[in-house]
Amino acid sequence: MVSAAGLYVSDAIENRVGHGKFQLLYVAALCLAHTFGPIHTYSNMFASREQTWHRSCVGSGPWELASNSTGGSCTNGPLTSPADCAVPLDEWEVDTPGRSIVGDFKLECHRHGKVPELGSVYFLGYAVGVLACGNICDMIGRRWAYFLGYAVVGVGGFLAPLASTWTVYACARFMLGAGVASLCLSAYVWAMELLDTSARRIMSWLPSVAFSFGQILATPLAYMVQEWRSFLVWCQLLSLLGVTYWCFLRESP
Image (tube, rainbow, N blue to C red; front, top):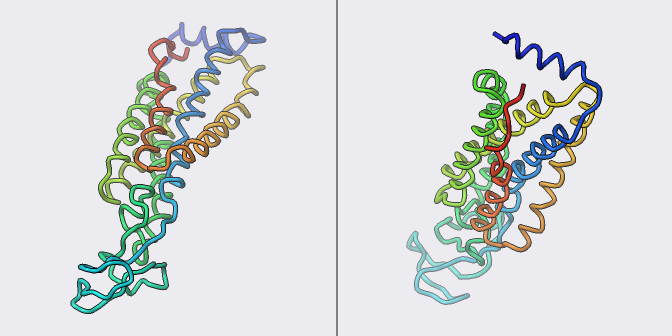
C-alpha cells in the first residue's frame, strides 16, 4: 500500500516541469550500470575464441610414430575439426593453453556445440532475472534490487574465471545473465521515477548508448589481455564500478 507521503512525492514529480542537476546526476550514475554491467554479455565471445591444435602421442616427438591411448599408432601433427574428429579428444593438445575455454575445456568435435549453448544459458538467466526483478523491486525497493543484481553478478563474475569445467562455467554464465538483467532493469526504473515527464525521453536512448560503450570497452580489453581467465577478472572489476557509489544513492520516491 502506498502512503500518503509517497503519493504526494509521486504527484510532485509527475506535475513538475523540467529537471535539475540532482536528477541528471542520478541518471548518469545509474546509466553506468548499463555500461559496465553488460560488459559480461559479450565477454564470452572473446573467452571462447577458436584455437589451433596438435596431436599428442605418448612417448614421441613431433611427427613421429608412437603408441596412442587405444593401443594403436598415431602421428603427431596438427589437428582440425571436424576433419580429425576420429582422433580421441585425450590426444588433442591446444597450441596456446589458457587463451580460450575452447582449449582448456576441449570443446571440439562432439563437444563443440557446448560453445553456442553458453549464449542460450546466459540469456536464460537474463530472462529469469527480468521476470524476477519486477517483483523484487516492488518488495524491497529499487535501491536494494539494484544491489542484489550486483551481488549476483559479483558471484557469477568471480566464479567464471575460476571454473575448471564447462558445467561450472555455464552456471557462472547463468548467474551473470540473471544479475545483469536485474541491475539494468532496476537502474532503468529507478532513473525513470526520479525524472519528471518532460525529461523521461532521455531514458529512451541514453541506456542504449551506455550499453554500446560497455561493449566497445570489451574489444580493446580482450586485445590487451589474451588469457581468458585474466580477461574475465578484468571484466568483472570493471562491471563492479557501478556499485562503488551505491551507498550514496537514495531510494526512489
